[in-house]
Structure formats: C-alpha cells, structure tokens
Image (cartoon, rainbow over all chains, first blue to last red; front, side, top):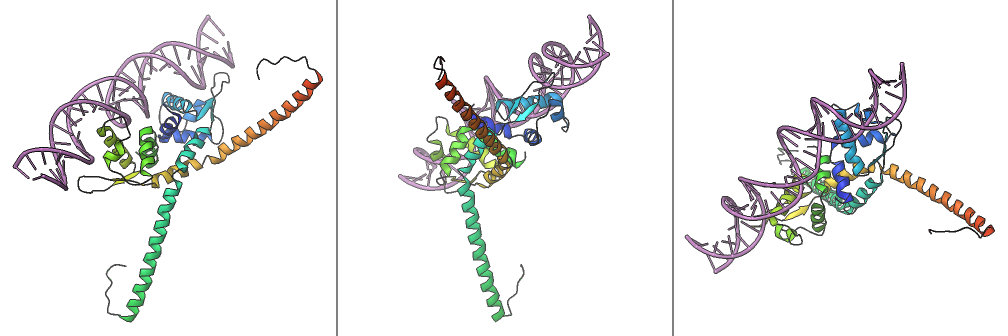
Length: 125
Length: 125
DNA sequence: TTTGTATTTAACCATACGGTTTAATACGTT
DNA sequence: AACGTATTAAACCGTATGGTTAAATACAAA
C-alpha cells in the first residue's frame, strides 16, 4: 500500500490516535501504553504494529521492554496532502462571511422598514 | 463511527483521493468521475457512497444525473487534528538541521585532516 | 410505450480489521 | 534451573472493504 494510504488508515482509529497522543508526551512501553484502554494488551500490540508499519512510531529494545516513540514524518506528508484543499474550505468560509454580511444588510433594511410601519407582525425572530 | 475516523478512513484509498482531486476543480456526474479509472462504474459508486458518508462530498439531482460536489469541512477538521503534531515534526527538522550542521563541521575537519595525510583510500563517496 | 442512458442495489468473493483467548518467546531475577 | 514479567504470535470470530457481475430503478427521448 502507498504511504499516504497507510498513514490515513492508521489514523482512522480512535485507539491509535489516542496512542499517538500519549506518545507525543514521550516514549513508553507497551504496558504503559495499554494501561488506559479497556482492551487486551494483545489488541494494543496489534495497533502498535499498524502504527509501526505506517512509520508513525519506531520501537527500541531495552531488556524485555520495547519502548515506542512517535515519528511525525508521515503526519507531515498527510498534512501536506490536506493542505492542497485548504483554499477550498477557506473559500467556503469567505462565502459564509459574505452571506452573513448580506443577511445583516437585509436585517438592517428590515429594521428601517419596521420603524416606518409598526403594523408588521413578526412570528419568528 | 466518529467523524474523524470516518474522514481518515475515507482518505485512506488512492481512488477516493483521486476523486476528491477531480472534484476540487468542479462538480461532476458519476460517469464523468468514473471515466479515468480502470474499474467498474459500480465500484466508483461505492467509493462515492463512502465519501458521502464521510461528508466529503454532497450530491444533487439533475434529471438522471446525480452530480457530486466536494465539501471540504471534514478536511478542515482532519487538518486541525494533524496540526496538533506540527511542532513535533518541526522539532525533528530542527534536530536534523543540527545534525547536518554537525556533519558538515566533521566533514570540514575530515577534509583538513585529508589534506594533511593524502594516503587515505575512499571506496564509497 | 419502448428504448436508451445514468445510477444504485444485490449477491458474491477474497482479503483486511479489530477484537478475543490461548500459546509461545524473550529477558531478568531468584 | 525455575519463575515472573513484557511482549508477540497463532488461531479464531464477526464484520467491513474493495472489487466483480447481474439485476433493478429512475428519468429522457423516440
């Protein structure tokens, strides 16, 4: 599988994202990583293997411990891919801004209108 | 499934990423979207359903066509998640910079050394 | 109403995923 | 050598994924 797909599919699981969050504050052993989760150590071990295959973590050897360390490089690539679309969502916000400004203008107009004719009935604000 | 997982797993497929790229230059019908791919229309239809479930596209109705349009909002959220780790890869680059500068310093030292003793044999550049 | 075009649904298949439980492995300690 | 702890591997299960082909649906045009 290509790296980007590997990265995104590794990120597509809340447990794995939580593991990365944990590792962002320092390396940890498998046991330490597994502690907060309501699932077996073996399940966590599998998640770690997925993260390792995606190169989101690297693992060392210290006696019987295999400490995991976060490697952010694939995140950088994922970020670069997503950034292609940044303009797109910013445009959308621009349009929303424009729309809100238009609404505001209409509202002001309505107010002016209302002050001229006090008979208008407003059911919904 | 939570939105972020939905988004990342939708992005974890090169065909779907290519579809999004296509849609970034404007809405398109299913047939138009499918044309460049070496797979059945039905397969593309499935991919579109995945993208729709992740709210990465929305679909209209025009006679018998169901044009697809890119919706970037989930990408914005994915981007926000990844950005948490930005500092991390920047740090790594800082360290890489430091390492490269160190290498350079050593290289300069080596050169100085070499110019003093021309007997050194270099097998690999 | 028949025909043609656009698209989805259904049924199927192989493989992957996320979890389990039960071994097996690797290392440190006694 | 035997035990305890850390971790992985193996076998299994239900469900999801990514693809196929064949059938159904929706609409336009003849």
